[in-house]
Length: 174
Image 1 (cartoon, helix red, strand yellow):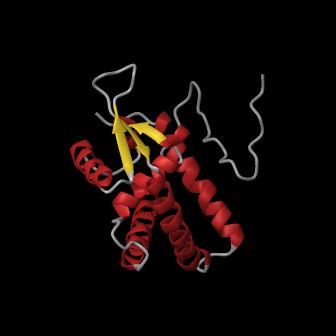
Image 2 (cartoon, helix red, strand yellow):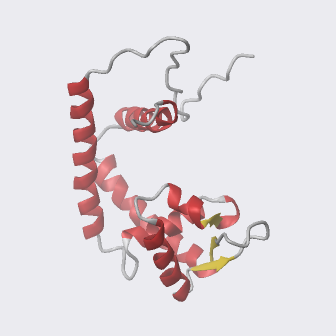
């Protein structure tokens, strides 16, 4: 069975090198590309943080609300919520506790794992995520959308998706 062709909005899967070694990377070019990606992110994150849309939410707290808004039924196990975030699970647990105290999320124990924690958006959390998210998307459109033409934005999205997805096939260094 042949895999489906990628759609214009889906990332092209990374090349597979079954039974052969992948080509040796250009170490310098890989480092320069990473440095450019990292510096662009730092520059943009500083601009986003300085934006006046956050009110009483930090960007990290918004990230929790955003991640939950994309989850099935608006809820995730705490460990799954932690997967896509650059924050220690203990720090995330305290943040979720604060968000719960403000009525933006609710915690519960999953029926199949008494040791786990489910985190879900409350109605107020959904409202705040949408309100802040709309303002944030407008800022992104201004800072990112005005910097690159549509074709380059599409290419950048696709390249970064491929880079992220390829990590699953690259062994960790031990």
